[in-house]
Length: 200
Image (tube, rainbow, N blue to C red):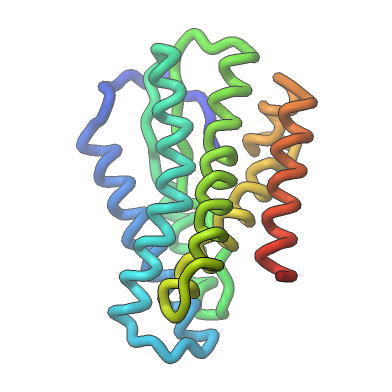
């Protein structure tokens, strides 16, 4: 998810790095707790490491994709966490589920509708590519590695399709306004990926 905010700043800032680090830490703990509550036999250290890997390869990749594409257009872009959203994710993890709105990438610059659509598409597109790669890796490995890759594929698929909802403030609304064909292709790929990981 991304939005635009009239705040100036550099390419990277200490505040942004702090917000990314806190978001990764909280989400990693939340996923580890969720897996534990759901009956995983793995130890908490292993669950935390696995969760951190999945978070970095889904949530962080999604948000940084928005940031990097916006910067390519000459715009200022930085990630900011939502503390309440992170705490909500942590609380929900004790119920065995994850529903999180950890933060957004704020953007300022001369961004037209086409640029806005492309910046918005970058996040879900990254999730689709990572999800497909993780699915292939899951099918080519066994044991814990296969499980981790399968979880990564599933989370990326859900993250992509969730963000492709064609309503504000989700990425899908900006992609749809920019190009309906691109939106439909991305949505179709997201549906196909999630169908594979859920019903294979």
